[in-house]
Length: 218
Image (cartoon, rainbow, N blue to C red; front, top):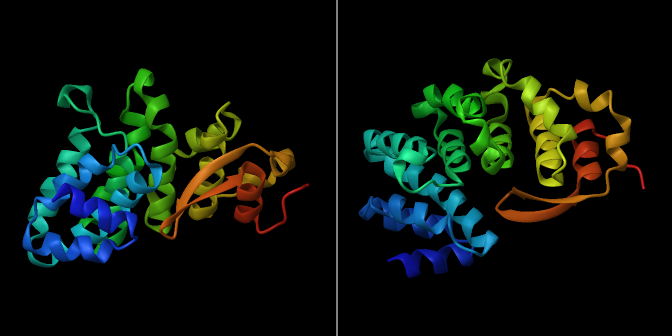
């Protein structure tokens, strides 16, 4: 089954994955394994497919999906014995697609940055920023506690973190910190952003500009 799922993901067919999941709920666990794939397009595609498949499963068995969300949360801990580095993104993707059922998980996903041990946070930071951004308006009312951390990420040495933080702030509609930092528009370092079912390579400055609705500086 894993190879079949991988092929569907590589072909950009998450709905095909969801059709299988409707018959076999263990697909959600198989997709967790595929988030470790060395091909970033497949790993991110597995995150997207997990959201689409979980949304389908939730039509018949929301409790099963809730158990899966709890498992993803557990897989953020070293005690789990197998840390899932894309767990924050997967949780956000599921919740964003079925907020009608799992809105209570919005603050859980948003506050992951506060709960994660400092020595582990660097591994998760960009993914957690993406997760908050993926939730967008759903997270806006519970983001106050983590907003300082998101804004501080604009000065992080890793452009992946800086760019994702800028995108996240734009998605939240909290762009004041960007407007006060015009030099960020000139940040030409590149990062990868997964959006609309594809990975895009963009400069940090372009992401800042998109969030502000202005053109980045050359």
